[in-house]
Length: 417
Image (cartoon, rainbow, N blue to C red):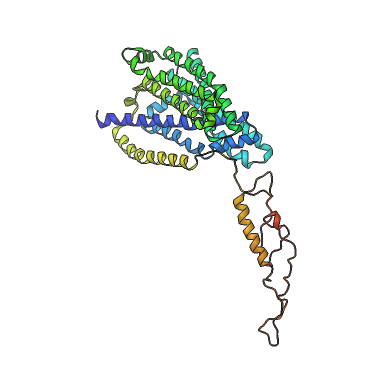
């Protein structure tokens, strides 16, 4: 194989693995968004905190995958976008709505918080359902008949269910106590609907794409491909066994749910990749037909060789830094519901300032209550003069220093409202 023939395959692999990384990484936080209505107000904050450091960076993989499709395979990008314009628009609206709701649910007035919670759920549902519809349309070769629409609708319902299971597995790892028990219950509820829908979709795929039949059921490839459905089955029942035995989760094996759900996604991805290769648009265009010139690919190769390790590096670093159990969500040291409440770090710093202010209150700055020692005949007072009180008591930073007075010339900011 020549270098010119290898480059399109290389970019196809990078693009596919980028989209797989997006589906897995952004899939769990889409699943958490779909589970948001099932939690109470305190638990909702913990759910958001569990994905807070990760969700925005997870979408980088979508940008990389679609960007490569655009610059490396522009003809395929034109066909795909033309056929999927509406679901792509719905997905983007959903992702934008999620991003806006993520910030405004905390920073907006408290009375609007339920609205932004619902907006976050709606954005998650729109994005996940649109992705399912796009996948179904892609597998059918963008068929517009009743069978193709029914197949796309089936995946549009199956993918959100799979995301919910993935999100529940993430919460089992990231939470503890009652919320962890709820996450186990949520996974237990969704596992059978998701499994049944996945089997139905797998059985219907050869009907909507006849080329799959020869690739999967011909001899001898049927024996080589048999491990894929067998491993999916084992992973499914491993998840079921853990979620039906809460004591296993308490023993520290809750990660099995998330890991095996990811394994199902990975196996399904490689099964799909095998089914459609070497086409990039099923039945219309191969990967070599869709690629741009080799000279342009060489330039893009340099950029990808630099960009891809950076993305992988900061993704790994981010997960190492923020790994662990999720805690309560806090965007600032002073909460909106109680202005006098401050976090421990800010409180200790302000107490130190208060102590300095109290110590300085015994010295008059700029005071002229006595004659200057440099004037002839003046005597130093035997006791320090009393400090001249300020016109009005200053508002202190901590409730234990309420009413403390500042020396003249020092200004303390007003109490936050």
